[in-house]
Length: 594
Image (cartoon, rainbow, N blue to C red):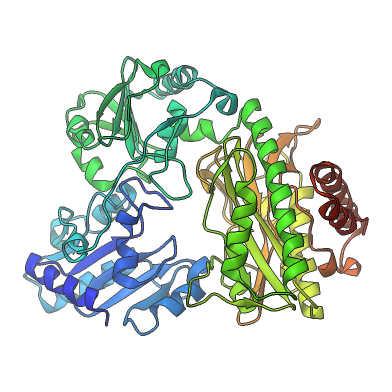
């Protein structure tokens, strides 16, 4: 058992807690977090972006989803922490587990309370409220203790939160002024009967004010809350974040201290109504709201506006993808040219790609940690190499390379599975089945009465016919110089509450993962548009050739082949004029008609 867990149990005993809950998020429900918030990693050693943990006197358990099963198995080995594979048969949810655990402990000690502890600031209100509902009723005698960050008491080397300086995001990329955005938001508030809008998602405040920063790795946002009414705008930021203050264009915004939000929310007029999102509003902040106040819990109007890109954002993003296509294609050629000549590792490839991309105008960061998985490492869905796992790349098989950048004109995300040498027939056929699934999504027309689940079905059909599938979503939204994983729009097996609409930019990324052997994923970002018949169709934004050596055309339909040929023609026409002579010849060869 890790000594950190032993220390945590001592503190739990002192506080009278039966179980302590540790999620992987921050005060805003962010996916990627500042180092200060990596409490789950500190306690467990698990580095995946999505995880939740319970520690009790009789055990420790960590829940994560299918993207991270293999990674979690490796990182939790020998820790005494049991891996709970989410959505797998006979694996309880955290709430189900807590319900049963409380029942067992209370059966042994019927006269005492069962106490669940957690830091209420890092737990989304949605989860806290679900626990309230689960344990409602006096007979339950279950209490929530949300006022203690126990991990902080044992994390002696915890990093500080040092806010970065907020910078002005150019209107030439944003395409819409903050005044116009706020006016549109206020109109939505009025039509929904909301007097207050509480914005807690970091990407929403950054979008609303056309501001960016670097408080979180890979996502150019800043720690903030926004409280909006029909006649006031309050922005809550950390001391030092604004440097010389807000830009003159935002002179109408009242700036307040980041932590004042809790007091100000508690002082809202209880006779009024507040609109908030319980997925990003933390539980502690929710508990500050006047209890009798009318509360509207839903995706905010900001969230629903920013997922529909305006014409300027679309044009800018297309430009970013062309620059990104140049860089990724150069990396692929470099890799193929050098894999037999020198010792290359996954980390070397990641660094080389970043070096190439940062040479492009306006590229200022990655949009997530680069994922180069060679051979068996490619089968770990969200694998990222460490010093311990960094594999040598031999001139054979596949390297799965998933990567993305932040440009001043757009956010990118692209996956290509690259043949670094001879392939087996199994590799070629599986690559082709993934490509078929990928192309079938691009060919799909979303008609009236359809939902994202219909696109998901199209993206799995070619794989399921071969007994194959993948344990991650088919598609996520992508922000504009914001989060590479943008919600609330997504394409999953289940119907979504958010309708797919023209102007959305989303991913198309089916895959196959053969544990211990290899992984394959092919990903483009795509822009949804409307055709003449009113159907939603999509156009690819990603501009990088597919792996020609891995395509078995005998497994493809004529329509699929024609689509790949047309895509490759566009890639060739777009990239060749921007490349040096050698790389241009490489692209011409890779994009010849199938």
